[in-house]
Length: 125
Image (cartoon, rainbow, N blue to C red; front, top):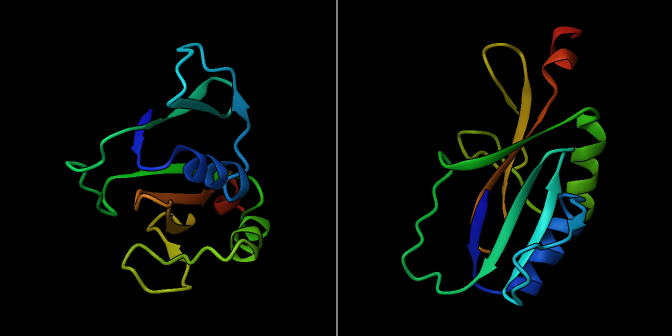
């Protein structure tokens, strides 16, 4: 997945600090691109450039699962990042029909990110 960003350093800091994504070698070897790992086989590419035509809404979002949802919420809160449920209620946790819990928040460019607990964790509730 690639995301056009306004400020590569600011966005890279967010993806490392808030999402704890590790930076991986950028094989494109261009100064305006940085790559971050998501799991063992996926990456998100941050590409600094013209953001003028980019439109972001909550319905278009990146979803990441976590095995420790409560610890993730505490970490997101500790970074000062505001989150909400799917309806936009600040500080609230969303619960899907299947019982999975998630939160939504925005990166520095307004892209929405959903962090949800792993499905197996929801089955045990």
